[in-house]
Amino acid sequence: MKKFFAIVAVMGMMTFGITQNMVAQEPAAADSAATEQVEEAAAPAVDEVAEAAPVVEESGSLHKELKTKFIEGDAGFMSLVAIALVLGLAFCIERIIYLSLAEVNTKKLMKDIEAKLANKDIEGAKQVAKNTRGPVASICYQGLMHVDEGLDTVDRTVTAYGGVQAGYLEQNCSWITLFIAMAPSLGFLGTVIGMVMAFDKIQQAGDISPTVVAGGMKVALITTIFGIVVALILQVFYNFILAKIESITSNMEDASIQLLDMVTKAKIAK
Image 1 (cartoon, rainbow, N blue to C red):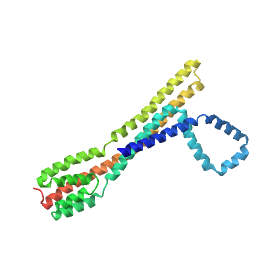
Image 2: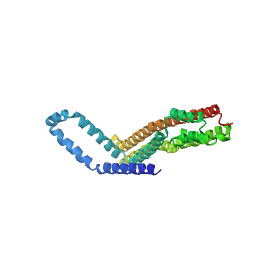
Image 3: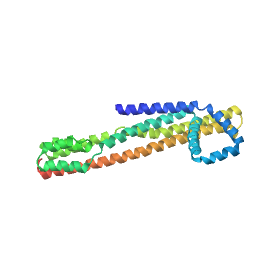
Image 4: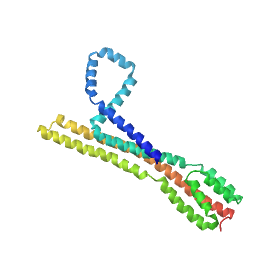
């Protein structure tokens, strides 16, 4: 948990710094527009230079465009969407690290346990399972701990402890689904706020013209786009996490069946 909170803190500081940088660059937008007008006056000379480095200009324009749209969507409100992305990614990274550490070479583990059980070396089989990380080794160790109590007890122990390990694998996944749902909801909330702003301007101006409505509509659309993009990013990570959980759970089920067969074959439990 300490590592998780450290990740959240670092990513939160990065988000706060990015937001402050974008807000600080907002006054410079007008100066940038004036500079571009001056550069258009010397179009022949500037065009030749621009053609020499088109890739650099395009990359800079994309980065600048993203920052501009972030500010236009109301930097204060868009920060909530950015925080949802950061926290969601923090939980995703924590789960990916945990699941990656939980994966082991199941075939090698079961072969080592089978070799020990074939020689009636129960303590050796316990040490093999104990010295191996991951939920597969844990359920094997718990089953071997009750091998003297009978095959039915081993079966019940492996099944019960497998459910506990499955719960550990799915821990914090509910938070990821929360931020997946929150991101587009915040975007839609921004849409409603933008529409309210547009109607307020119409009421103040007493005229329904595109110029009056454009500002509020832009805020509405930008916040919706960013909210949907954040939800899509988190959904990709969430599906990857679910795939890893299903793989580990399948290995746990296979290992539990193999362990019961090994115990029965070695005639260790009654």
